[in-house]
Length: 235
Image 1: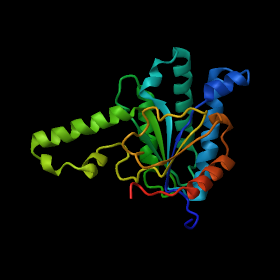
Image 2: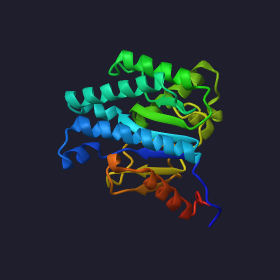
Image 3: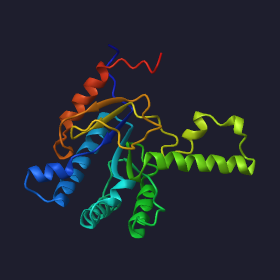
Image 4: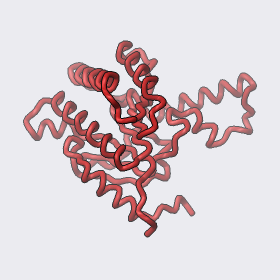
């Protein structure tokens, strides 16, 4: 095995807040609140470990179909999360929201705060936390395709020059390496429309543990497992 390496980019599908709440006799909003606290703990731990990028699946384009009460509770949590980072030290972390903030379903006040947060932390040099909010992988690829088609139509891009780099430069994760490691909690074994372009050669770890119970020790164990993998990328 090669020398022990910290993955440059870790992506996490944070799943299981609702089931954790139900099994613990709590409400769904309480489950999401505990999940938000777990995210803060894990983010700080990854920053200390030297992880460069952490991308978390926080709210998908499909999540708007949940009950009005649950969506409202989630928007409240996002608002508080952003406010906290706007007024407190971020431990030199860069916050980036990946997803469609222009969509009419997103509360305008929340979108404004998120943009302000990204601007406030853009020059930080620690871990870059990508929060996938109102994000859908297929929608991201469609957005990129339309932008590329518009460039071809306008004559600023030759169709024969379209390649993987061109596509990557039109994704939300432009300028970032693809995830080395993808972790999903809750026991589900699927990607759920999360970063379909970017995770084609990522290592996957599926844990039979709900997100609120995910710990710093779990992060360390996942990184140890990652180091046991032989990443050939088709070679």
